[in-house]
Amino acid sequence: MFHEFDVDESYLYNEAFISFVLKHEKKLRSFYRRSLLRGKEILPTIQGLLVEDGVSDLFIYLSMVESGFSTDAISPKKAVGLWQFMPTTAKDYNLTVCHSYDERCDTVSATSAAINYLNKLHKQFGKWYLSAIAYNCGEGCVSRAIKRAGTDELSVLIDGNLKYLPRETRQYMKKILLLAMIGENDTLDFDNETDEKLENRLIQVDVLSGTPLKEIARLLKMKEEKLLSLNKSLKEEIIPQERPTYKITIPIDKVYAFYLRYPLPDKKRVFKSHMISHTVALGETVESIAKLYDVDAEEIITSNHLKNDFLVLDSLLVIPVNKKIFDKISK
Image (cartoon, rainbow, N blue to C red):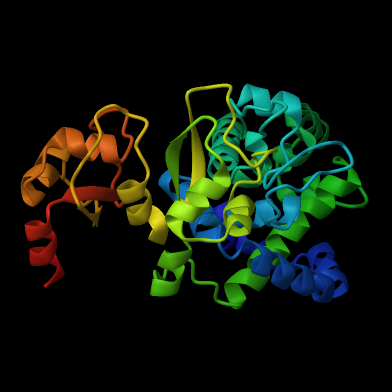
């Protein structure tokens, strides 16, 4: 497990780390359980985004340390969201923060930004544990610590006696590793796609500006409070007016109801009466999938709000089909 952070397994037997585990394990186990309960609906989405972009899903534990999986967490320093972005960093990674909405509170947008930032840090420092450390204390702080220490060895950088890094950062990396140990030993098994986990997955869809959330909740036959809890980036109970359309998050098991009942912002409205899901396999294209279900490729692009015909392996598509095809597949 440690190797996914580029940490040598021998660190498990480091005296300082053992001392940290003995002192903090009970408290962090309790924190872990509370965080897991709070984030149970968004965890599969975060994990999927991490893996899709080449970052270990164990970086989920970095988000856990940052926010306890509270999408609208606010720190004393005014960092916000799952990944605790400061306003300036949010701007650098294209997260919109304005009077009516804050994308730092949006699961998909904030996670995508965090992935971009972590990948940038990994490219700069070459090791994932250095990326995590820099995420906490900044790139300059890590660069100076490595220069002073004459090494980028983890045990040296976070040594409590040498103090190359701030105490908060030394504890930060140990917390991530300990929570990862707790999580993996408790067999979270994020890779095991059970029906329950599929039901808890989230997806983003485009809605028109000015649309009341309660109207969307009514169309989806779900409680307004539930929809609001999934879209804490919205500061009011209405879709912002600043741009023509806005992405909101809904449970993936509501996506069929959404596309059947909500008028798509795109003029190329799909009028098929049924929707089916399709997971993209190796070698498949929009054209080949369209041929498989006897639909127009443009209908697939429109229904899934694709910018082009590029597909990501194992991603989920919604395919609009007629009743005949739907009945055939359902049998």
